[in-house]
Each structure stands twice: as C-alpha cells, then as structure tokens.
Length: 146
Length: 146
Length: 80
Length: 80
Image 1 (spheres, chains in turn orange, cyan, blue, brown):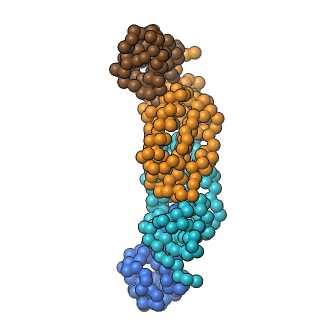
Image 2 (tube, rainbow over the protein chains, first blue to last red):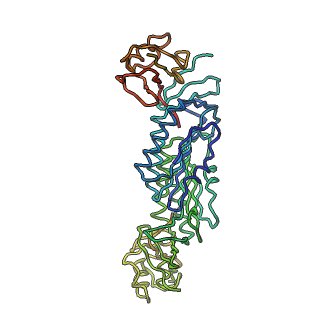
Image 3 (cartoon, one colour):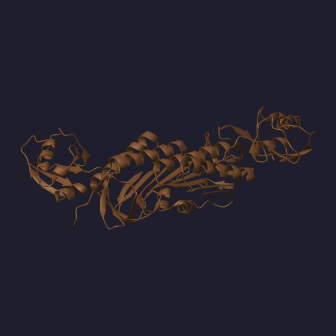
C-alpha cells in the first residue's frame, strides 16, 4: 500500500508488479493519460501542479479507505506533476485482489475519490499558444497574460 | 481490436501499449493470474486447455460486442493455454477509451463474458499431487487416475 | 450421415476419448446426439443438460444437424 | 494572530500571489479569512463558496482558527 506524488515519468509496469502476490487472482492497472483534445480544443500538453503536502495526505487517506472497504493492502497510486506531453501518464493506480470484482471496485473508488478530493490542477496548453486552467467539471478559466 | 489464444507468456505491458492512442484519456489493464490457493486448497499450478477454434471465435465476438457497446476499437485480449505456475498471467485485457467510465465498463464486460462463454478449462494441480478440473462456479471434478 | 462429436476436459476423461464419429439418420438433432453419447460407458457422469456447440456456436437441443457437423459437448467453462 | 493563506492555480493568478500572511483577532474563522481575501484587488473573480482547507484538511466556513494555521483556498480540483 503506497501513494506518491512524483515528478518523473510513472513506471506503470513496475506499479503492477509491486501489487502482485500469489494470493491474488486479479491485477488491475488504471493509467490516466494526457489527451490531444479536450472539450473540442487541440491540446499540446498539460502542466500539472498541486498543493503537494495536502495532495499526498489525501491520496494516502484514499488508499487507506480503499484498503478498509475492499480488504486488500495491494494498492499503489502515483500522480505525476510538471509538464506532460500527449500520451504521458498523469496518474496510475495498481490494485490486486483475490477476486476480480473487488479489484475493479477498489480501482474505481481510488480514481473517483482522487478526482474529487486531491488538490491537483492542470493548465492546458493549446495549439494556438494559449493556456487555460481546467477543472474536473470541464469549466475553463483563462490564464491571465504574463 | 484483437483477441488471441496464446501458448507463451503474455506480455501485459505490450498489450497496454497496443491500445494507447492520443485520443484516449484512460487505459485499463486487467491481468488474471494463477492463485496459490483455490477453495482452501494449496495449488501448485494450473493446466489450461480449450476448444481452441471456438474459444478464438467467442473471444473475437466478445471484443466486437464491447466495441459496439462502449464505442472503442482499442481493446486487446489474450488468453494463455498450457502449464502455468503461480503468479503467471492466464488472461490479460487492455482497453483504452477517451473516458475512464467506459474503459472500466468495457474491461469488465470482456472479462465477465469471457468467463461465461469462452470454452477454456483448468486442471488444478495441488500440493498433494492430485489434480482436479475446476469450473467457474467453484465446483470440482476429480481427474480420473492415469 | 456422420456427425463428429468433440469432448473436452472432464467430459473427455469421463468418456475416455476426446472425439467420436457417430452415424445418424437425416433430421437428427443435438438432443439425439446427446442421447447417444449418454448411452455410452461412463457417460452417466455427464450432467443432464450439458452445454453444446455446433460448428463452434452454442446450440439448443432441438437444432437439426447436417452431415459433417461438429458437435462439441462443453463442460462448464473456467477460463480467465 | 497571524494566519498563512495559500492560493493555487487560477486563484493564485487571480490574486497575483500564492501566499499571504494575514492578521486576525482571536476567534477568527475560515469565513473571516475568506471575507478578507475577497476584499483584495482582483478577488471578486473568486467563486462565492470556494473550497478551503485548514492545515491540509478540508474545512467548513465556521471553523475557528489558531495562530499559525495554514488556510488554503482551493480551486476546483482537476487531477487524474
């Protein structure tokens, strides 16, 4: 059981390996990646920032909750910050469990809670050179000119 | 979109890479692995066998159905046959989708249908040297002495 | 007409073979094949209503067979 | 007492800073901090009820603050 905010690329295969265990029958690896289009606009990259200490604390809380709800300690989550390119993994969640149903439910719980509670923000960069803060509800706030 | 019955170890990271695409925001990799205990008995390995041509056909059907239901062509499934050891991947399903909800649902659809319909069987090998056919409902049928 | 019957896993063990070639008169159904197989030595261990596929598709008891059809009697599946 | 206020992302842009140190009399609440921040130049762009955390925990408007508390005004989160 582990969660971390990281600054380097996430090694998703290593996360899956980290939760593997002879008692588990199902491993589920969720990878969130940067899309080239959001809300109809062409994206060239995203800068992720966070209230880092609180984000780490919330992620640790979420993993603890998932352990209690789904009875497995085999949960690892990493969220990356900084400048990400299209296709880069921004978040990865590896869960393993004796039963597949619980693995799916635990994985889903972690990503949904993460998207609701963990104080991380993204500044999308568009083809036209503009940048906007995006929130999870799809609302945009233009970044002031610098 | 691809499905296959394979005889060699499944390269799960390659499956995840195969479905990745700049338009997708979520990749979900499900890996089914051989557990060391089933129904309270210590397992040393499992031999998977199949009605191979029909298994390939059913898997292709399931992937096509998932494509229609969840609107993504980024689905790859492999199921391995032969002698597998504890921890080996017997099945892997990689799905990518613009939205994470659909990725989870498509992945779950494929594994649930696979477990219901694809004619594959497993002969569990136990610590005491006995072997039994196991079905998805947890019923066991002892293999006749050879 | 001749129908090819495939047996797998525990059913192949039960009947001591994984393949049979059985002759039927025209109009025979999946149910007829099952009846014949069930009369064979050891076959009383088969469940009353096993899954059956004809030419790699799951089939009902009343499906009429053609010569050369491949009828598979399918134990409860356990993939994954 | 002095309260440290943290601003992030679009809110930091809006106020032109990511950190403030504000003085309050004893008994001040989260709501009092929000009221003060909202009186600052540019702050009318903040939403009426932004998320707030005190010492890294989400907090309600009526939470009473202590000296040295870290109050973060949190834009809608967008991780993942």
